[in-house]
Length: 408
Image (cartoon, rainbow, N blue to C red):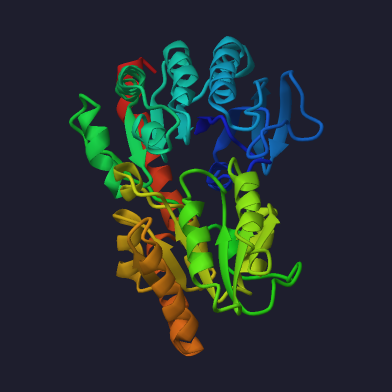
C-alpha cells in the first residue's frame, strides 16, 4: 500500500510514530510523512531547519516538511501559534507536496487534535480513508494540564474534536480507558480498536554505558518534564526521604517545567540528591536504565490521566527494570497486573515515599524479579512485530472495505 502519515511531530523528534513509519516500510509499504519542522521539546527549530519546505528520507520513509512557528517556551499563545501554523501550512501546501495516489491516510494524534484538519482535507481531495490513532484525549487533557479553563473554549474544542472524529473511517486508541470518551464523541457505532505503545527495538538490551549515574540507590525518571508529570509530588517525596541520602533521584529529559524544577531543587537544597541530567537520544536510554534500581513514573490526579497509559511504562518494562508509580486508573492497573512494581495513587506524597522506601529496603533479588515479570509481560502484550502486523491487517481491511465508498 501507499500510506500517507500526517503527524505534527516526526524524527528527529523522539516519538513512536518514527518507529511505526519504519515498521510499515519493513512490511513492504510505500510510506510518506507530512509533518512540520522539528522543534520539540526545546521549543526552537533544530539546527539546519528553517521556515521553508523541506524533503528528507528516514529509514526508507519519504519525509515532507512544512514550515511552522516553533512552540517556544510552551506558553499558551505560542502553543496556539504553533498548532495553527502547522494546520495552515499543511492545508495550503500539503495537497501540492503530497501528489500522486495514496491508499490510506494514517494520523498520529498526540497533542494537538488539530493535526486531523489537514488529514480531512487530503481525504476529501484524494478520496481515501483515514485511520486515526489517538494518544491524547482532547479537550480533557487541556483542562487537566490547566492549559485552558474556560468552559466556552473547551466546548468549542469539544465540537472540533467531534467534527474530526466524525470524518475518520477507523479510530485506534493507545489506552483502553479512552474508549468510552471516543464512543461518546462519535456517531459511529463501531468501537475503537486498542493499539497500545509497543516495546521499541532499542529498549531490548543495553549497549555501552554512556556515563555513570550517581552512586547510591538510583530512582530514575525518564521523559518529558512537564505539568502533567507532577514534579511537585516527586520533589516533595525527595524532601521527605532526605534522611536517606543514599536515595538518589535522576531525571533524564527536559520540558516546559525543567527550569522550574531546577529552581526548586536549589530552593529545597536537594542538589546532592536530585540530578537533572537533561535530554539524551532514545538509543542511549537503555544504558541509563540498566543502572537504575527502580524506574519512576508519575501523573497528576485528573480523570483524563486516570485513562492514560504513559508510553514510558512499556520502555521501562522492556528494559527489565522494576517500576514505582504514582498513577490512577489504567497505568496503575497495568503495573499491578504485570507484577512489574509498586503503584500508589497520584499526588499521594506519603504513599509514594513509602513505596520508594519499600523498594529501597527490599532485597535486590525481589526487585529484579519484578523487572523480569515486567519484561515478560511486555514481550507477551506489547511486542513490536505483533502489534505492527495487527496494524497492517487493519490497514488492508480498511482500504478494501472503503474501495466502494470512495469509488476507487
